[in-house]
Amino acid sequence: MPTPGQQAPWQQAMPDALRKMWESNEPDLAHEVAELRKEIAALRAELAPVPSLIVTGRQALDEFKRLCFLH
Image (cartoon, rainbow, N blue to C red; front, side):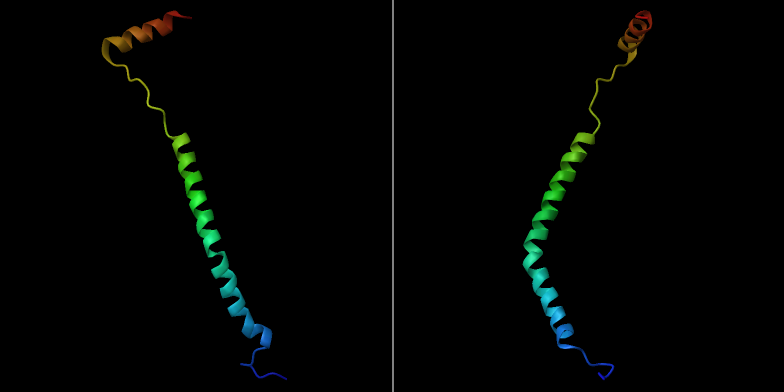
């Protein structure tokens, strides 16, 4: 029967295997994160409000009259 602090050989190898797996995938993760950031930036650009023409004063009144009399 194993003692409480004793580990099986496969348990001792697991941290090394996980570390190697993480290190081998790190460039892929960095690339994936970079691609996601680009995609998010593109989506934000698409969602940005479109600048519109602001009409004030007499021009606004004329436009309002034009819209009201179209119906």
